[in-house]
Length: 263
Length: 263
Image (cartoon, rainbow over all chains, first blue to last red; front, side, top):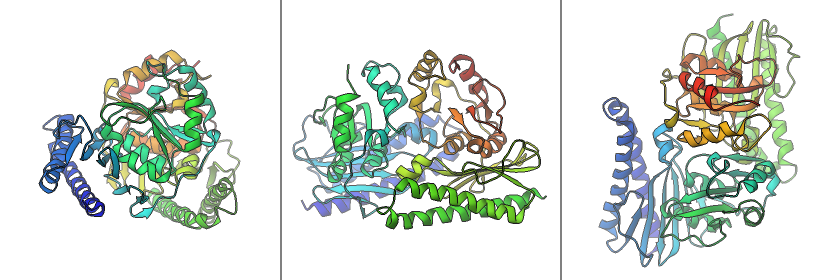
């Protein structure tokens, strides 16, 4: 399997799926009054995943698909080629904002990330990477990340992890809020990962993400030198839900050593 | 003074200023290594305000300008025509992200908001309104807001107001986080206000905003039926810093009655 052929095919599939999603919005405006907006949105989610599966199976019958909507394969290992797909990452944004959501896709072979994609559907922005070939934003090379001091950092963290919760030691989060320059929350893991990769955020964390939320981003992150682990500083397990942090290298260590403490 | 003439002029000024800001980015890429990025950015902020002031004074010599950078007039009252201007709302985004910032402008006559503008510079999206004439997003009419239940609401609130702080009763904020569907934080008051106006967020709150951050947004908010007050449920004073909330009507009351409590 030539990786560049696979890359070209995956990109064309993503662009076509996005076109269908954008088109669904225009028909939703008509349908909206007849049915529940949430139902329709779920349909678009499902239809998009099925669109991917149908085309992947046709062209690569031995590839398996691990997708959010569950129409893909029953994945218990990462042997061979596996496509990890979230057809719409940021579903709440999709429903409430009709923007700020992404198609997230990672293509792995025997557990190694070969290709990664985060496509911001409404902005028509594609962040992508191939193993050892660098990351690209709309075909412009993304530079390697440079370190930043924690006091000058802007990090992606949702307010729900900053009130007392069952996952995190609250004192560390208070100290973190008092130390960093600022925080943001965009409601799509894929988009927040893309912001870290492009240096628009210095770190992003979450308490529970699924493999398809992060698989594409992890391939891209590696190419720019961003560090990805769970919040116990262990490698991500792409067969289950994980806690998650992506950050610039030194900042990653500092955040886990001094601020973010799992209970 | 014909309001439509003024509107047309203000829009052309905003678009030209934005063009200059976008152009500054391209030269910044050259200058970046020679000087501090923050200095340069400050220059763009200042230059943009001076650009507005120069043109407004030339064309409307009796109008006064109340701007963030302080090159305008010494404003102690809102008599006559006053332009309340933030040339770059979301400065931290401007520096860190080179996107997600806005030009925010409100034109008031004797304290009454006549015209309001929030222009997302990098997305080239203009939200605007004229008193009693409705709000428009890129010249498409923005519909009036419809109520939403708090459990289904997505609200704009920064994580820094959700850790214990000197402004807010912490218990109410914890309860709020546990009740709403989700929260977001974008780092630009003007953009967050624009999201509420367009129904992409159901509410947005902040502990301290300046008149120029919100004056434009307040004119627009009125046209779609969004409620704007400070967090003591009083009218905003456009001569000083305020706490701030904008929300859908019923939600506004519910948030202030049951969740957001100033110390």
